[in-house]
Image (tube, rainbow, N blue to C red):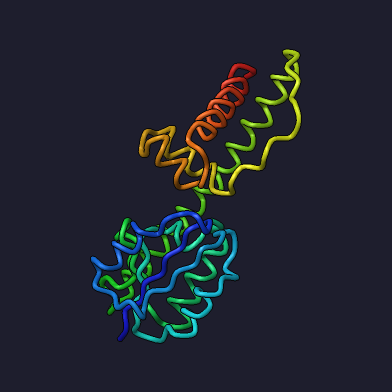
Length: 207
């Protein structure tokens, strides 16, 4: 049995140090750590694909958090089943032990519970995305009714902006930390958050 670590950051300028430290804490061999500096929107990643070729039955794949595996929960579910069912390896999520499939594996309880939790997370993530898009649309419509005109198209936000914005809004991370995770200037991040908040509040007031 081998233990492998997988690390992912969304951009080349983001620091994987926190995840690397977590792998060191788990005593994973350096040669068994795979790191991708790419988007989490799909699984066409060079190091992840190399990792899949190395994984075999009885091995354990360790990740810091589920979002390091990916951002698209539908695709995460496909890969999850590929690893746990087809390959027969286990998955250990450091930040969410309830997802660990190497618990009580003898009677499949761990795998079953992990699958249920993952399905729930997929549902919550999809619901949250739909909620945010709905609020944005309502806010923009309400703003236009009030005579607010939107200027030139701004620079596209990082793909992880919504999830990091929610963490910041819930005071789970600081503004500077959020900006660092997204590879943005912290003043730019704060300004875009205020714009997002204004749109959401405008959507609420139109109800």
